Length: 351
Image 1 (spheres, rainbow, N blue to C red):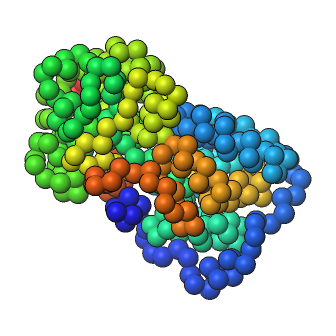
Image 2 (cartoon, rainbow, N blue to C red):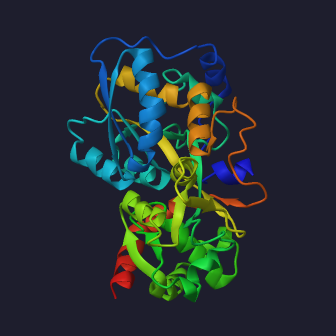
Image 3 (tube, rainbow, N blue to C red):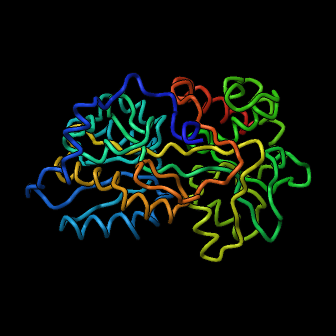
């Protein structure tokens, strides 16, 4: 199961050589952070705000006597910030989804994470380091269908989204949001009868199936939190493509919601971390990345966000539903086609 969850098919060749790993393993932490500044700006997903503010930022600020400025938004917006500020970057580290990481590499706005500067990168499971260290996965939430527990007892299948009894009671993400891909792949799977591994390439069938979903849709979201509020209030019954790092903490806080793992399978959210090329305060930035890849911090995040950590020193958390297939798509294929899919999706939903 680990291989399905973590191996997103993006490695071009092995990043860590045995000699580098052996030498880096002796390092307790990155080079001493010299005082250029005690402040860094981190770009991240808005949906990560809770654990960033409760766990990551207090931990790092206390340990390094530093200030972390957190900008929560979408991965595509983070990429636009890096593009727009290429000549004078203000972001030091960005946490965003793997398919957008590919675009960032192509744009030349990232700098590799090295084992010398970030020794905890040697402790990650196979497949968690991509494109020779251009980015690494830290924790990976799983994604399924969030539902209102006052309206439903559960969601056994992805096909439940299409049932006529839920007319006007469903919201799905835009394809501009990475989690929007999950409904697209589910549509392909249902339309073709193929497993996700094969169905993900049947794009025409997926869009035909999405057209059949339109009567059940109240709206399409680009900002998840607003739609999640509608779910909690019972205005909708299901919110497709939602992830454990947001839905399950809300459940634990008493909201009338739960996250279903449909029998056909769930998805691994591609949560990555990278260093911005020529970003301010690079030593503090590498220290931050090293902390994010550490066993202690990853364990706290994984338990809070019901996510799978990448650090191999962490075992026995039980954060992924047992017996349900976990699918990680071909992100290179997604990245190469996403612009066209977004345009096609927008036209379909507007018609």
